[in-house]
Structures are given as C-alpha cells and as structure tokens.
Image (cartoon, rainbow, N blue to C red; front, top):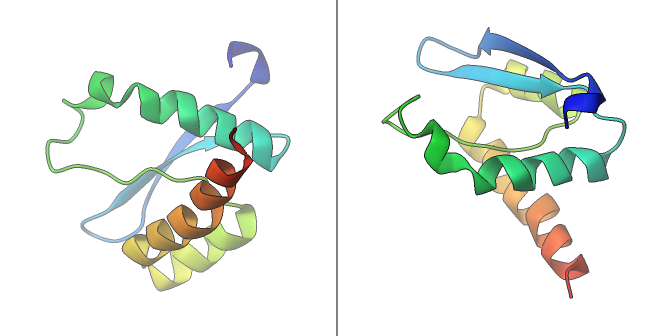
Length: 92
C-alpha cells in the first residue's frame, strides 16, 4: 500500500473517542483490501490502546453523519452487517 499515497489524519469525535483516518482510497474494494490487511495485523497495535478500538471502512458521506451523531458502535454494527457480510458472500 506504500504506492497508494495514503494520508493519515486524526480527529476527536467526542471527549472519549478519537478517530484515526487512513485516506483516500480510489474505491470501496481498495479500502476493504486495506482493512483486511490492517485487521490481520491487530496484534501489532495492541499497545496503542489497551481499552480496545473499532476498525471500519467509511465513506465521506457516512463519515459526516458519524461526526454529527457520534454513534461509533452503531456505525460499527452497520459496517459489519453491510460491508463485511457482503465481502464474505463474495469469498469462495
């Protein structure tokens, strides 16, 4: 993914939650491919936050909504249901 010229930014969602964005991907497939690689290496990030963290892919439109409603758990559930189940259906 080094050749993709990705940018990493960080924003506070609220007092308890920070979001780290890796952007910008050309399409959903590339974003999901990165997600699979990233989540496959979670043990490397174990010391970042011992309280845990959520990982998901989010579009610009959905990010704006997430920033407004601040419902990280709700979006994580949405992502798991709509994106991960869709990806698993495509796998052989």
